[in-house]
Amino acid sequence: AAFGHSATPPQPVKAPATKIHGGCAAVLATGRVGVKQPIGPWGDFARNFRHLNHRLDLCDGAPMSSQSVSSIDMLKRLVAFDTTSRNSNLDLIKYIQAYLDEHKVPSTLVPNADGTKANLYATIGPDKAGGIVLSGHTDVVPVEGQAWSSDPFRLEKRNGNYFGRGTADMKGFIACCLRAAEIASTRKLHTPINLALSYDEEIGCVGVRRLLDILKDAP
Image (cartoon, rainbow, N blue to C red; front, side):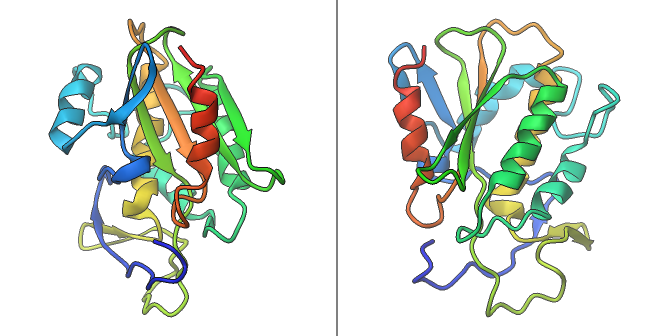
């Protein structure tokens, strides 16, 4: 949604928030010739990702290490970063990079031209073709002019729902991806799981274009 349009009103989301965004911020499938078209609908993603869910809910709070963070706790942290598209997303991106570092997951930042924002790309598992890309955008739409009854940048639970700017679009999904990355980092994977987090999706899928320029030369 561009700034010229009305901003998305507050929307409740059931925990864990796992709705996949469409278009350029969708879940992507990769192959030997690079990034393919978004896969869908949601059921296709579930079938492709189910092998990671053996005996453990991807989004539960089961401890994995001293640095383990549940998806809901991660969502609280992500919502607290005001990454409205007019702002920098670097604090959030650097937090995610540090979190991945704690779990021995290497990542690469792909900044914008003036270095005020960045995409993040990370791979868990073998460095080879195939696998999947879990892709999401880190920016959110403005909150001005909306009737929020709570702080939009503080996650709040009411009647089983979680409220906060970006819970559904799409920090909830990113939180679950990071939880899944933590779990996957402890297992021996035969094919890679890749994370692709972009900036400025809300104003025209701007950031992901720079990321795709890098990915076209990836395995």
